[in-house]
Image (tube, rainbow, N blue to C red):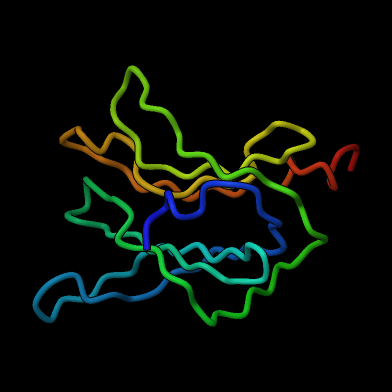
Length: 134
């Protein structure tokens, strides 16, 4: 699946950050970040590809059976692909709270056209309407 498949209106109900050991090449394993999030009752898991220690990117995003522990009341979000900026091309999905207009979750790769692309996995619960004034 691709990040653009998640563009549109959704209900976000959980997010967990974790790390897993993945086979990077040959028999070499490396610890990588993962972000698990629940949209419309379905869990999605995005995994980092650490590449070579200087560069990183999103390895993949898949539907998963992972049980997210950090659950919360539904947050209505609009999934949007981030525009490219003056620093480079982006392949990032931003989930924007429809009430606050602020980005709650970002996942993907920034600077995809650069020598140093970078994995993005950011959860900002303070931007959720349900946390306003907390």
